[in-house]
Length: 283
Image 1: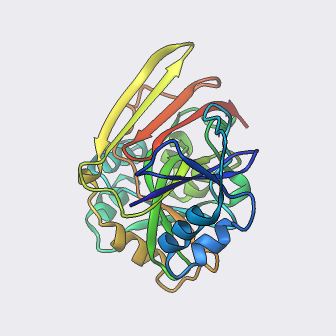
Image 2: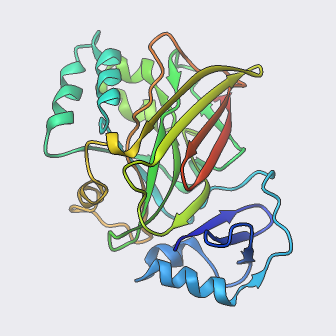
């Protein structure tokens, strides 16, 4: 059994996946911080579903806020072969391609800080590309929800917006390429339940002026590292008193002749979660 948590401007809504379309209103007595610090998040949510009032209606077409409290968002890189190839291509001119080749096969994964809650966008909100960047792409990623004790209890969709021109210029510019206002979105909901299986599909479509300009797909089986492995490294010598989100890397990267533009619409779909849609703006 799994539950989906939607956070909107109206309230927070809870859905049991075994009874889709039936929602509970969590206007009272719920916080994401409590969820991420619960000893058994699934039991915690199940209890809320039994006691919360039934929502009379839930408008799925309205913008959602990101399902986040005080959690940090982190990300793993070069976890898919396609990501390794793309990162080597962008860094070749600066001579940094060898590092991405090595980290793909290394025991220790690449992990980096991605966003605080205020920098994280939700479904139907706007994500950003930097005005000082010339080559920008979205990165669709299965994103793990991890408790303050390091236990994976759920997942969502993540969009790790990236400036390939800045990162490719010098690997030391990674924070500027990855961390800026609007560089991250998660949603449309947080799924609380078992981790998705290897055949779970991840799709992305980018539309420009109503036309599809890029479409790609992969599946979780193409991920080189396990979920527990990635979360374990994140919590090594580190603590997250409110828990954390961890993006697990991307297996879908547009070719080097593609870059995002202001006004583009990005739609990322993961089986069992739904579709996370964002429009692009320049910051």
